[in-house]
Amino acid sequence: MDADKLTSIIIAGGGLVGSLTALLLARRRPDLSIVIVEPNAAGPVPDKRTIALAAATVELLQQQGIWSSLAAASEAIKHIHVSDRGYLGVTRLHAEDEGVAALGQVVPAATLNRALYQQLGELPNVTWRAGTRVVAIEQQIASAAVTLASMAETAAETEQLNCQLLIGADGQRSFVREALGIGMQVTDYKQVGIIATLQLAEPLAGWAYERFTDTGPLALLPLPNQQASLVWSVAESDASATLALTDEQFLSALQAAFGYRAGRFVGIGERLQFPLQLHLAERSFAHRAVIIGNASHTLHPIAGQGFNLGVRDAISLSDQLARADDPGAYATLADYWQQRKDDYQQIIGLTDLLVRGFSNHHWPMTQLRNLALLGLDAVPPLRNRFARQTMGLTYLAKPLANGERT
Ligand SMILES: Cc1cc2nc3c(=O)[nH]c(=O)nc-3n(C[C@H](O)[C@H](O)[C@H](O)COP(=O)(O)OP(=O)(O)OC[C@H]3O[C@@H](n4cnc5c(N)ncnc54)[C@H](O)[C@@H]3O)c2cc1C
Image 1 (cartoon, rainbow, N blue to C red):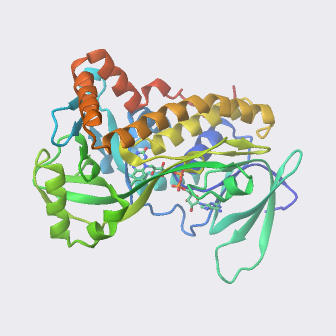
Image 2 (tube, rainbow, N blue to C red):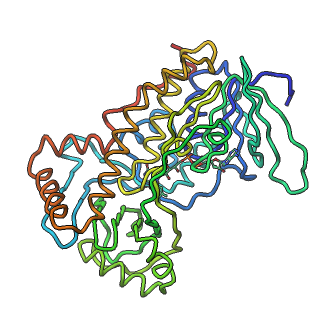
Image 3 (cartoon, rainbow, N blue to C red):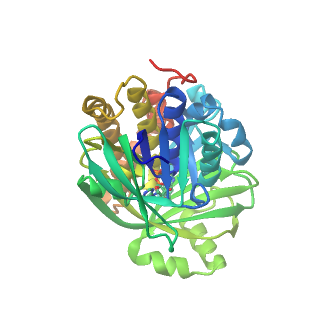
């Protein structure tokens, strides 16, 4: 690549949010050149998570022609059951009550990232720089100079590219955020999320479970082939012991914590752990740069909203840039931040309330949350509002026309 040439946009990070943003931008603005910088040498990182996509995210993927390649690997969420183990409080959401075919879909993150990667490969204005990472940023008046380094141990040389806008989609430990000097508010929940795929004696038949247990919140998502995706949040101090259990011991501890509402757990795949923290950047933009997705906010997975929030970053940024003569102009980035702030506060507030409210064993708190769950279940308009927020329907994406520039 010609070092003197000005690239319109560099995206640091080809994860789910970086790739989706590149796709939306490249389709709306074929006149912009986009470079994605991704350390992983063989395309996107093979992420082992399974994620719940809100209905609005699924609709966006359908509009973008990606859903057809994911449908076989996905499972619809038709009902959601939220409960507090050992108490009466329960809320149930049903797709048919909300007038939709599904409340969301569950897909392997790697399958989604690969599908995005393949679509990006068909766009002439996108270049994927695999096996490189961003190692330095210099903000200039009309551009940002971005230094890339190869991940290969033998390659000591670096390369500089100039762009009008740098998008940091480089995840929770974002180099871009740090280099821009954007501060971070961190809340450590002192919990670890253990994820695994479970084999079940009976299929979940479209039910997703969110269960608050003595050991921590536990989510089960339906998967094809009588399987379920598990996220079990356990106290940091219990994590090593829980992970050290044999499969059999783990399954029986899990069954004891969850109960038999989803039938018997009969098998388990590889177990992985993630530290559970809330990270929120104090702002999402700087001169000639913006941070999105986990680089800007990392949530506890309790409500399955992290990626869905990043999707709305991608939509909002592509909306702003669809109109911009200079994609890195201050006013464009400030408008973007203005548009995103409230959504962050709402989703983070809801997630934080769930984590703290349901990790508390004091009597008044357990009564309150059970009343809240019973209240939600008994009052259809309240339940409907909760469901619409869960599905992300308040943010339904606008159809994005190929090559559109509004
Ligand atoms: C256990 C668990 C379960 C979850 N379940 C759900 C769910 O059900 N629903 C939901 O919506 N969300 C869920 N999430 C959240 C979701 O996984 C994340 O929000 C999402 O993966 C964030 O994507 P991202 O692209 O912003 O970041 P990442 O996936 O972290 O991608 C960052 C990318 O940047 C690259 N990178 C790193 N450093 C550099 C550099 N210096 N230069 C260039 N590139 C760099 C990395 O290689 C990577 O590809 C869950 C999270 C966890 C932990």
